[in-house]
Image (tube, rainbow, N blue to C red; front, side):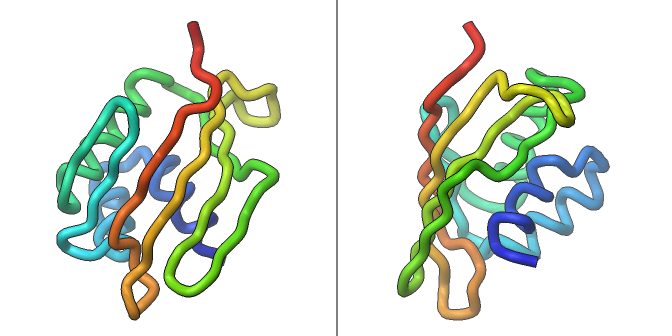
Amino acid sequence: MTLIDRYLACWNETDPEARAKAVAELWTEDGTYTDPLADVTGHAAIAAVIEGAQSMFPGLVFTPGDLYDSHHHVARFTWHLGPEGGDPVATGFDAVELDEDGRIRSVLGFLDKIPS
């Protein structure tokens, strides 16, 4: 499973315990997540941001976009949010920094298209 698959699986996980476990496995303890709507540090705060996004967009799922690129300890990729198999209502671009073990140290997220 690729980094983006694991990352999007966290964002799509609706069970709070399973989501907390997935976040803890993917992010470092002091990992950060920053986008226009959030700026948080640590597993519990990241899981809470994910839960908040799910509450704002119930029933929608994150899927990979068309771009994925990586080098050294950084990666960037696009993502879509929409109904399963349907057109996205939101799209974005995330850049991640990884630690030496391949866990996420930081995410910088950008929202390219959001529902009005």
